[in-house]
Image 1 (tube, rainbow, N blue to C red):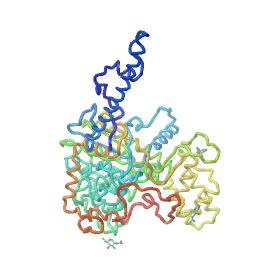
Image 2 (cartoon, rainbow, N blue to C red):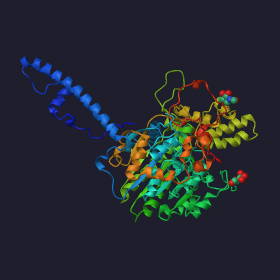
Image 3 (cartoon, protein in one colour):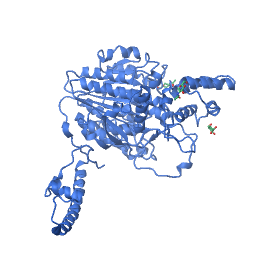
Image 4 (spheres, rainbow, N blue to C red):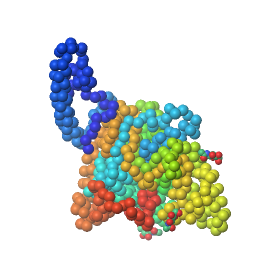
Length: 610
Ligand SMILES: *[C@@H]1O[C@H](CO)[C@@H](O)[C@H](O)[C@H]1NC(C)=O
Ligand SMILES: *[C@@H]1O[C@H](CO)[C@@H](O)[C@H](O)[C@H]1NC(C)=O
Ligand SMILES: *[C@@H]1O[C@H](CO)[C@@H](O)[C@H](O)[C@H]1NC(C)=O
């Protein structure tokens, strides 16, 4: 895609047409005379100036079109200029943060919420707000609405791919990632997430599979069971169930491979709980490689975790510990480190349409962002922090018309402040009530109590309570709960899936992330990371393809593939699934597949899928 000049870039001065001086330029632009003339000569002057202006304008337009054309041609596959900081050189660190599913409305919501709850002024804004540098266009190769897999592949490989693809391209070939390239160039590498380490975002940095649901396989790649061997030095997050053999409690693997044992054999130091995490002493006691799997699947939402702090570390704690561990491990090395940190569950709260859960996720992300800034401030090795989202989730709107009459211009963060838990948590509690053999009115009362205790809702209508008690799989109780709190806060949602809106880019400074100032394609972010680290992704791709485990026969289509040649990436999509180009409307407004599963979010962890 052609790239525009960065928003804040110094504009080229008038030297594109150096025959004009500044005064004349002014005159051409404003149509005003630069000097007073005598009235008699004014008419001639007027006419000739007008002609001049017309001709010059045409010339400038032609020149600038030509110039831009040349510029675009030259920029294809190259980077935008480095700007005032110059091309980075010497030892350096890169921290890349992903706020999964966080769109612009999430920021406004969280800012408004924080100001209310903490009693702050309107200009007391989030740390993120102070570091916005641009926006990212998020479409994938086969849809205007990306998923997290294609979104993260844009960051990790710098290339567009199809929804569901984990660091593989539309032709089902693997693409080298910035993390792999960093490792090969001598950097230390790490990943910190609050969801499963086998989920799409982390997966796209350290594994290659044709479909995101092959989470068992992703786990294998991440510990080094794939053509490049081990590339990750530090992993913190959830998803333990994909690393345990199916004979063990808490496993969700489809086979009996014990990846924890295998990882240990490969040298990983392993921990599975808060106690193990605390023993790292903020990172000073960390020995790499290190794998910390702190939950079977996801680490609970911050709104729920805050009452279980002794069980699960926060995103900020994990980020600080990872930064300490990596900086310590690279103290005497030539290269620094690359660390990816994901606020994974902002997205989940969006899928759930749960604003109270989301506002706390974004606050936790803001804190983690601030902790990385603090690290960069204090560390002697220079570095950059870039943060962005893969896409927006939920189509969130901060105002909602609840009645046919013209609405008041309001939304109410106080409603969110009254919630003490996520709808996910309340939904879990609800199961006990719904499956009990209480009579109807006892159930109704129990539901009312739970609504008050969990969501701070004291004015539930009978219809709402009954909708929860009588909920079915097409309109599950969690949807009802989310709708109840969202209506009261006057927050709107257009979907339980993703949306196509541009998302924000944040950085530690514009100077160090100059090429990302302004509006970017999401792939520009991947290209920037590679350029900042000065690594060659194509070399890694070549290595992946020449590993003997991948064959170009895969390109001939699923029906002629020799399975052994591609099986380390799992089965490709079926032949009839489009990996490039956009679909069009075909009466979809009428279609409603009630049997369809709930998609990415509802289908959960992909347990047992290979
Ligand atoms: C566990 O996985 C093995 C294959 O590795 C399979 O043969 C066995 O049936 C599985 N056991 C269960 C309980 O799913
Ligand atoms: C929050 O909860 C309190 C106590 O139940 C209630 O009085 C208040 O109206 C609630 N506020 C909002 C905005 O829902
Ligand atoms: C499920 O519940 C919703 C809301 O109560 C209702 O409109 C719908 O008809 C129900 N569907 C089924 C299949 O029972």
